[in-house]
Image (cartoon, rainbow, N blue to C red; front, side, top):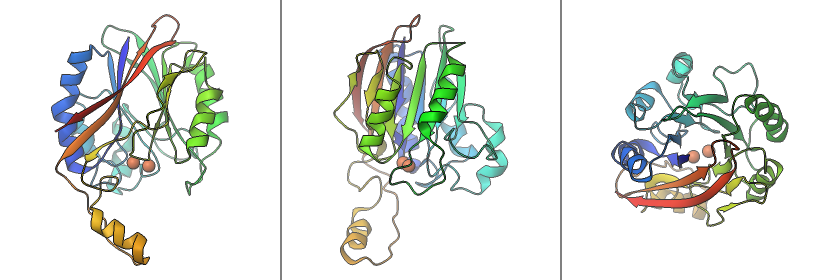
Length: 261
Ligand SMILES: [Fe+2]
Ligand SMILES: [Fe+2]
């Protein structure tokens, strides 16, 4: 079966691009499931019910994953329980609301496990080991299905590669998110796990990671505080198309997809 994974959706422009392109891509490639990272959907940081409702009417996006900005919007705390298709990083405190993995039914009836994990290297957070969390979650999901997609939301390329190799043969794909820049290292590992260090973003081409260029340049140049507004136009969508065998969960192919709006 084919699965489309969409990189970090940034702000209103990113959401608009997803509403215009997700269904088209799904039909073009015949995807059974569409997963998107949504940690920057609301104003560039965080997620909320309004944004989730905008991109989840079928057959648009089936599952939304999170990351270090998942709880940036206070209003989302009260709504978090309303959206079973939205995953926060699984390797955070169990006292957090929400959940970090789930089994979802694709078009055609196959079940697909989707897992959201967050890295620890160069990310200032309180995440537990993503490796230990992956062991536990993957062994649990594999009782139901071998098709398992892991969104590894992390900064360090080395940590992402390490988790990809660690899970090779146990999941269909380990796809990185968070850096907003797609990497050209997509491959299927020997054990049958598709891997890409970062899928990229749905955000403005003329930007720095989706934000206005000048304030970011000034911040780095001077060290002075600056406000980073989201750029809402000239959007590029980075996504990755996976194909995996339904019976074994093994990846057949992985391909980068780029669409400009
Ligand atoms: Fe992030
Ligand atoms: Fe992000």
